[in-house]
Length: 419
Image (tube, rainbow, N blue to C red; front, side):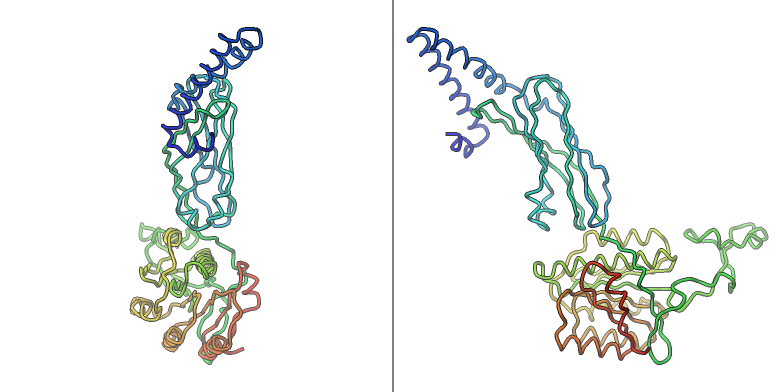
């Protein structure tokens, strides 16, 4: 009977449950009246509290229960844990036998990771006369994305489950999970030299002992760069202009093509994380950085050394999605005229083909240093090995990123055109 009740709508369950309780009450009372004796009246009076509780639950307004969701940290990086607390309060101290509170996970999170359906987001309470209770749950290893928690479900009923009441509370909270950022201690930028590419010995560090000129102060410049004597003479903030190394400006390119939603999703997420880690590495040293996302919906971020530029790009990477099959070379070529000629190209991709390789070679032949990060956890077949080997002979340094430990893969060092 209980199984049949569960298949009915909420209103039908309440109606049939109330009718069942009234029917049992009538049967118990009739048995006591016609049978008489201690046993029959004992059965009736024993059932009476159960019946009264069911009737009170029937008329108890679930709107009296107020919900609040507390998100302990609304901005995370990929891989961190999200902690949430559900707070329940009410005005009427009605003794509910049980109360089940379940937070509904965002649909976007369940689409990315269906196994999250088994996450424990439920709290079971025997309220009694309590007016305030709460419970805390945790979602571990959060994936990149922007998530909205919108609903909390309440369920309660009588002792035997004849009357079951349910209410859905709308409560909107947002959580932003940025791509996982790793500190790339093993990565050094490249610059172009005669005969091939090699590692930069300066590692983004400018020579602070000599400067070529002075200019007006711009927001984002370091205070240590201010020329106080020139500032006093000009009566405005003036900063020193240093001679930067050749690879001071860098463009990070993320290829969103060539990714199948299911079979290659892990490689794409790894490439997004790597791009974010490279951006972090560049901006931590005050270097100027630009960003290009190549896909059906491409994006271009102008060169900037402002700290906010990093967060603008990270906010874009929160929602970037794979674009399926396409040609990266055609899209990238459209942006080449907008790139500084002295900038270095850091190309992050999950695919390698002849057209893209030819474009990278053309860029390198113009005097722009190019470094390729090939993100793929599979063993390289002979054709792809030959393609990457040919890039190495064309002044392009290549890396294969096989897992989530970027420093481990970079520790070996990229393949070099010259030693």
